[in-house]
Length: 533
Image (cartoon, rainbow, N blue to C red):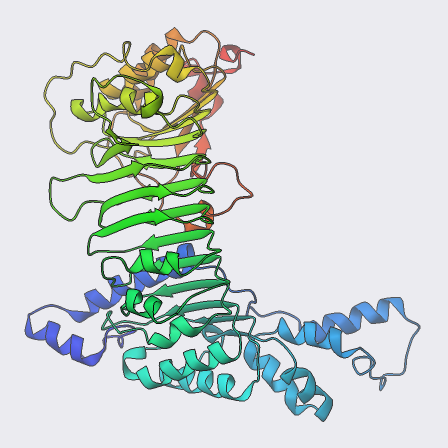
């Protein structure tokens, strides 16, 4: 083991245990680092300040002032003439270590520092894990608050549980608004102190790699988050009903994001305030939207049932404003609307439709007949869809001879309002072509076909071109744009930031792709001459 890099995440006890089992702990360390990178980059809110090398705010301020004022002697003190309000604004935007250093300049600067609402990002402190922990403790103890934002992601808290409890007590007393709290595993089931639930001031809360306490018991004791609007739970060990209790304790919660729940999540959504629920990379037994009058987005990505061969039940009972729904998978989800479970052959009625949904995303293995045949049934349940996303998933097993006929599938009424279709990971398979032939005449304006990336997904590009050209012969009035995927098979990992960004109307629209060359487009007949108004 000599010369090996030290562990970043794995604690000595776990490393010794893995070695006794004949497992290289460095493999677990690397996998854990990849998980932490994904959580920090794609799931957590970005830090509000940066420690990137740059000219100091003070230097830029002096240059700006000098550009608008008459020439002053070199000894002139331009900073001291600024009001405290402006100085507090400047100091609050500095990395915490730089902000704290301003207190040594003069007594006035100490007053400015202590009256600032600081931003504490432990990743910008940069020493070893133990000294980061000590530095965080010192800052939280010495500054009176309130703390505008606190992001703590660098400490191995299994060895500092007493400090963790103290941190949360201080943050509760000093009114933190935005809190990100991630443990550096292992072990990955370090219990979160009950003090977390006493932080009544928090507006945005993200927690990662912990074990939740008994939330139902804490709620019974009066714990609540009266101002919480955004909650993210990443790779956290939870008991049944824990998420339900946290939602019930958050009367103004608008965004709920869950990743890495591996015990078998059973979620009942009952909330007067929730607008977005997104669950990714989790073991999910059922999701039931019981009563959510403001819910606009329901996003289920990369989930599976705890028991092999069983599907996740997704039931929509009362969600009158649900606008965007995905990624619905016929092979992994059973859809329920009201009291009806949607199955092949069921009659279409008002009781089996959700009229509010305008954007729908489906993940389908067209090579599996039973899954492909459910696509028309799902489309009938959402008759007012304007934009349809289809992700064609690769089928890893032989499905035998396919006999698919979509012509009698999506009825005209079900397709009446669709203006755009985005079909991703096209490989020219028989089921994909059959579906496109059935839907092309009914898509009113635009069809975007994104071919799979052959660098990640082996398939014949020439055959796919030929099959798509044949399918396009039925086009009469829609414009077709052909792109090629620039990302991995199935697209990149889900990002909470994209799912909860309400400035973007379509949370499923982000995709890594590029345009084929004019020569490639002409080869398959999708040049400018094929585009029709």
